[in-house]
Image (cartoon, rainbow, N blue to C red):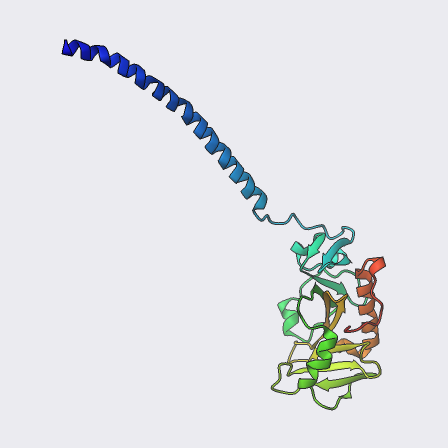
Length: 259
């Protein structure tokens, strides 16, 4: 009787276990589905937030690009932008531009680098003017630097430079040694540049002209020091370039050097 009763009880135990197995079989697909949905959600979030490389650069013959730097609007010809990745509309931290001199046409399209043989010979003729526009950030304004920083390192007495210009050399042993401040002897606020001196061989001196725009963006213009022989034309060309880079309603008054 004991053995028979044991066999009689086994089907009942099996029946009791059956619903538990059936319940587990229903939960497993639900858990798998939940995991798949969670993975899809994570993948979507990663796709949206993952930094992506900007689209291809605009062609050189495209119309002027509307860009902003530190919230300041500029209209920039694509053919003047030296770095292809910067050749797009929208907000930028900085842009690097080149223009032909004296035509002031965009200077990137068709530009050819000098050959090593040309560099090894006499000083090559330089026919481009370079402009960098960048956010001013916490940097000191150019006019403030002229008033408070340069006098600490410059000579006391200026000497005559090219016609109509005065030259103030920086002392040896200072951060600006080997450079000169050159400015309009009558109205220094209209034209002032800091220039390196011509070096040996084919190393030309370079001048930096700086202007702050609306206390937010800095424009730095670079050109060969030898151009100072016709500095009035250079000053006028810089003014025209900066005017042309601003939208018509935001144009900067001319003769606003180093402000």
